[in-house]
Length: 413
Image (cartoon, rainbow, N blue to C red; front, side, top):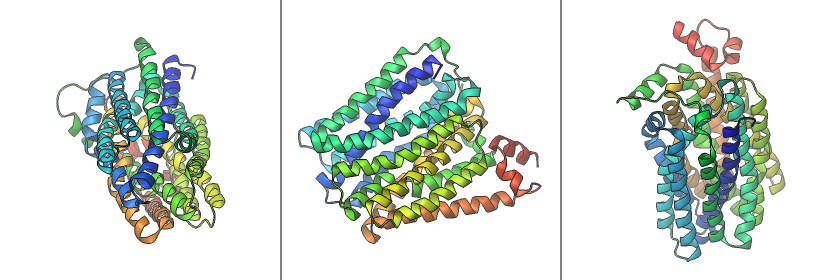
């Protein structure tokens, strides 16, 4: 935070992230209570629509992030997100919102997010020296999850107090903060990575990842967590409305509880000097245990209590994986690799969200959390066994290695 450009960026991002969470909770509440009668499949389909472009456009978005100034690309993507949020707010305020219109807004926002995600991730490395990158990634997560702590609770109060339309207006207005921060930065103090020149940028990014077994391992674990374990938009909404019969205020509080653990994990990540595969596997194992306990919680209070360590473990896994990838890739390829990383993290959502919605309708809300717990647990076990079978190394040494070291030694064999 001593670096002015990063301080501006983090401050604007915090306000924008609070608004984004207000918008997400409001959208989910509208779909479940105003446009349908607690239809989990409809919510899953809209969530899938919002995230599908992130997967389909990721290679091209990453190539753009490596070829053009990231600050300008972020201004473009943030402006698009602000405008689409304002459109949805207008539809809600005039009473003309339909499922079709929400689908349309979700699709356009997904396209803007596809460009925004890899650009934003890679932009952090231009704001701070490499020695501060792990700290910056952790603080970014702290900002995101502080917003997650505040946003859902505020959304519940806003929905109950002034309605879903005005809550969405505040979401649209929040994007002004990050746009103002980007404009106030000193471009001369940025540390831009070498830009990609010529054609073949997408192919080059795929080829780079195909040679890195450590990146493939991390991305595989992140895929399972993102596809089956991180559907909290759906699972928490279903548990709140169909199991515990919570109102809007209670739903906002339940949504915020998990962020207590997530925020603690982010602050711990900011203190961590370097990531490790051992920490990643331990966090995923913890997520498996506590999400299973949350699925079986007999009342809303125990459910909320178990969500705290769920958030702690999930965010620890994500910050560890994110920092591992960013610290171990060639700066000239960082945008493309981070695009693939974000596509894999969020890319299972178009498949996972409808599946989770169907499971919720067929087997009940508790099953949606249990499925994620089992899937992440199996993936963690398989990854641990695979690491133990790496040739020429003791399992204890391999699991403790940083991904960069594993990549170098693995390629040497």
